[in-house]
Length: 537
Image (tube, rainbow, N blue to C red; front, top):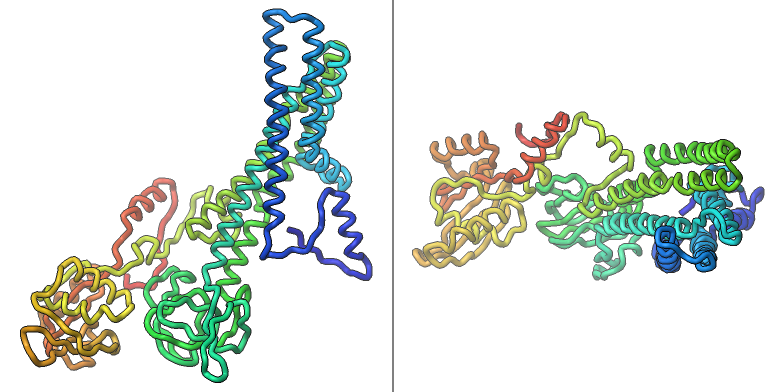
């Protein structure tokens, strides 16, 4: 893609289009929703490779016959005939699929900008001219096998680079689709209609149900809930939101329905700006790629100069010998690796990172990683599993299972951790029927009936602040256990039945199994490693 800034009254777009056409490019308006050009370019490259491969393989068979004939003997008329046929195949490879290199070389000459296609085209031109002359004269070397194979391999390299860049673009495009494609808009009469996110505009009111992603940046105008902001911050612990709070597109509403007034959508939203930065990193040339281009410019003139020196040095030995040596140098010195390797490595790196959910803001970041220094880790979901789990218990396990029955109706990381742990413990010793349940500050409280008693029983699950607000006394033994939990990096959660604390669980985010190995490996490589976290030390 190319961005043009121009003055229509001084430079008509038609002249710009005509100039680009002379360089070998067709100009068309960019439409992000269509990628027909990608398929057409892919088919064009594959067709060129197929033709070049066919010509190269047949040219190689003839070359094998000629090389073998040098040791076993071949009639002069047969050698001459095979040389002509091979040269014809080489000429076809250079002029049909190899035409793309001459178009690029011509553009380099017109713009006075050294380009990798220039030495390639020069080598192909000299090799073809000298090889064809030698084939017709029946003397000297013919380079048809080298030329045909060189065209084939160069085109394969270009196709690989094209495919990898498209895969990287596709991976980034998938990241751009992390926000929902539809939203529930609230009309003036109170009705709710599902519409495309693209149709939302500033000022619209949208309802976001529990379990749905927020479709746009906006302000909460109705309801209270908790949001998982892991997509934007990496922190899996939910953040409370209430009327008046600003929330971002891509965050997940996990507790109760809310309504927001839209402030920004798409590319104007926070997540949209982040993703645009990632996409632009794929398009921009990194410092190391620019360095390769600068080296390539010097390389072009250096190779041409060396070829001229080789020709002059060998000229006393004869025109044929001088031409053969200078031509061989031009063909061998084709800068394939320099032209392809660096941009290909950057494109593949960005694409693979995007597939793993790693947002690379700038391609130069990959270059910085080649040198050691200070590296900072986020904790939640990076060094840890990013999922709360029960890691210690104290008191009645039956009451822990009872608490899970109340927690089942709440979509909260701590509630889910207790439910998962209770599933391992099994069912309680008696049948349970939950009568009512509601959220309170720092926890939940509810009423249940079990087979052991006919009257309803009260249960509360929450932190120490929750127990104090409900005027539930906590024994000294539990308070002592709470201190142990905190020292172990756990969050203590109390469980009370009929106004008395009977159990406690320690909730924590377990360390990833691979985290210790990864950090140790980085330290061995010379990195200084630290953690950036808002958690308790």
